Image 1 (tube, helix red, strand yellow):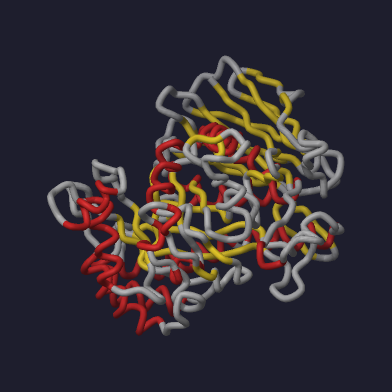
Image 2 (cartoon, rainbow, N blue to C red):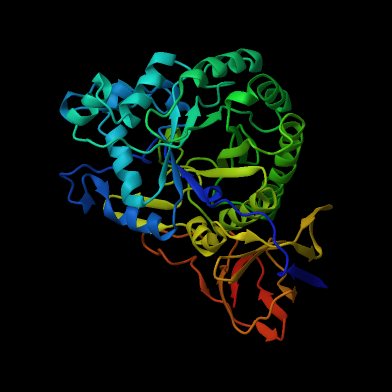
Length: 490
């Protein structure tokens, strides 16, 4: 029997809304065409930023947006992106296809985007090719309210009031594209840079150190040992992929690849647990957040597209991957304070795909929308008992689930069925509350590789969940094969 017990009368930790963060890098068609089209574009826009994309992301209650990278961040010099656009220098994007970057989307445009989205900016500063002075000056330019040369330069560029900045990354992947540094070297560099990373107004900066990838536990240990006192967050990058070389298609796959990718996604739990254990030794009070600011599925680029642009389609498999990963973040929310899926538009596991004036929402977008009620809610203790999904002599859990209660007392239960063949009848027992009404939505499709196209944008989208039976405080939920469900209890 598949059973979910929810202890609704007990309180757990708060699921930080920033776990539902996003990431937009100067990479391929994420910024240009995906977000920025320019004020003269026939595509409806507000000060050059696409209206349709903003509206869609606002509907997700997007809490934060990470920018300008990624690898691009450690080759980005902020002064190139301020002042009159016609005077901004044209530079080569060395990491992503060596295309020419015109710097029309810079600091002011990004902060305008965050304002339109109603989200907090998360800016990643340049350690790899930048200087301490450059990073320190960027913060003064953005946050100082007084009479200084940099603050007055901001005013000259039509931004009188300083911006409020909280989240600040000190470099990106400095073990790799951010400088190929050793952990010991970066720890010292981080301490030096972090000393000069301050908010120049009344705000407090949340400084995020460039952390490890995958199972690099040595990096975490060194950073926590040498620099914990100077950081508020430590980043972690983990992508779900079948193999790094010769990546597999996003849409053409069999059950073997379905199973393997979801198993890779579930490994996120082990990655977080191991890094958290190291952090606990140095920070038992969990003051420092684990910031998983790059995660998601990484497939081969779509045929016929520039492989350096990392444009991939997004299927029902990716939606389920997103659901189980968000559940893992909930389970570790005492330590995981923020996460940023890669990436927002037209790159990797995107929320949105665009083609000229056209825009479609991906299956992953719909999972974020179905799960948004978890943002800032109290995680409820659960006990999930279910059978395994077995394939070719291997096994993973067939079910993944999470439950939370918001400030109005509503309970949101989300669940994923990872098995592409077998439906599940899930029996839910609720303790410590009285339930009088239940509504739900379901995301599934007729094929494991179903995806939305510009010709058929609604192939994978939420529908009302049928077959739910409420009997007192007992609820039965029917989960079709390969599905995601979100149920609200009041």
